[in-house]
Image (cartoon, rainbow, N blue to C red; front, side):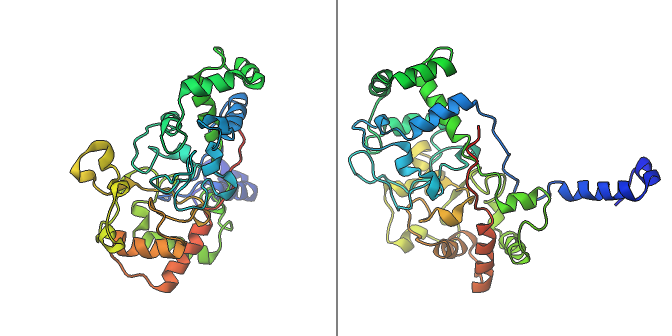
Length: 320
């Protein structure tokens, strides 16, 4: 390590300080650490948390956002497909809400550019909540707590736009910056074990990191499901939910193309893929090797990768 002239003249104490600073420097890796905070307004986020758990957002007061996005379960619901307000199943597996604010688009097909737009689409979805803003605002306006809370937090009080903003503000607090791998990326070499570091090396060596990188270890690009083989033929056929991005663009190049999911908290968010077809992380990795990488991986290498993936687990701070 090359020291500045002033440090060379001060001797051992400066050398120790410089070494400590170097150790704490973020590592240059294709995966980046989650920011410690997205700095949301506490009052708005608190309103959003209440709304996130309020079943009155659905037309028959049956389901809330939290019904499908259980923070304690990693931000999903551990089901292949979630039940909507009438008990009907949704078309695809519910993505985790944890770190969703760090995704470049929302939904598997990327049809929403923002969290606010995603909220709109869930509210009006005829399977999920089946409601409308007119209906919802009527319910919320009858709640004195919401009226006073929104009057205090927003200049124009209780409006549909402010309800959307409040829910999104809460969702932006659901980031997980304290995973052991983030601590490692921030310069703590002891945050993960040698075996977990070896698993990360395998993750890069096999090419998993070509799609699963960046701050969310995914969530920042689209990719075809079945690059190296026909996943859907192998599964037994495709349906409308398998069309992916094509349903948004109607461009044949987008057939079976989906947003690459984040791998943060992946060990806690099974079942996997848009169709929930992989019950375990081991099964999901086998599918990835066969249909995305076109490679054979040893049982030991896949186990090592799973060790690494477990270092991405962390509960959200929920601190605005």
